[in-house]
Amino acid sequence: MAQVFKPAANTIAKLAVFGGAFFLALAVWSLNEFNRSQYMTRTKVAREQPVPFSHKHHNAELGIDCRYCHTSVETSAFAGIPPTQTCMNCHSQIWKDSPMLEPVRASFASNRSLEWVRVHDLPDFVYFNHSIHIHKGIGCVSCHGRVDQMNLTWQQSPLQMEWCLNCHRNPAAAVRPREEVFNMAWKAENQEELGARLVKAYNIESRDDCSVCHR
Image (cartoon, rainbow, N blue to C red; front, top):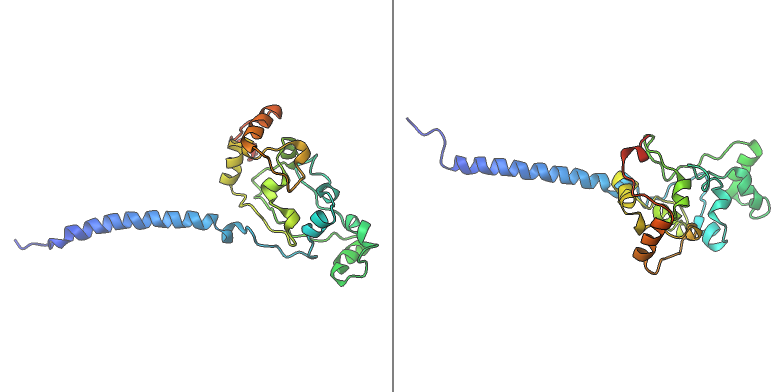
């Protein structure tokens, strides 16, 4: 009986099996990296807004506290978006004729809110509470980055589940004194020592069960 397969067929079969497994693993790895990429997470991409608001100018240069605009950040899940009246408290006197601020003046005159583009937009199935994080000593910069250095606001962190879990499983790496929560430039001299002490003082639990964020 004539030989059906040539001797090289075994080598080809092995290469096909192992090569297929390699390319499958490569495809899974590539998809995972793509999912974490800046293109998917939109990190470091400044959002276009109806008015080019500069946190750097208002917060760092003028010294306006975060809570002047984000009034509910200490007491509710939502940090709060300032009404146009808050802007006009200053801009009815300062740069009151600036063409760049025309949308603000129009919003105030018509009593219609400006439609700001949300930068940190979590999925609807994720629950996040600003007030509890602030109460436990997690600074704004831990999630939002150095907003005080941003002329146009972008998303600093990926906001993916693994990123949240890294902090929930090791809160000592991020916790700071409550009085420094809104201080963007604050740095601990020894975060490991301070974090361990504050975790006990603030009764912080390492929570990573699903119901914490998915309700």
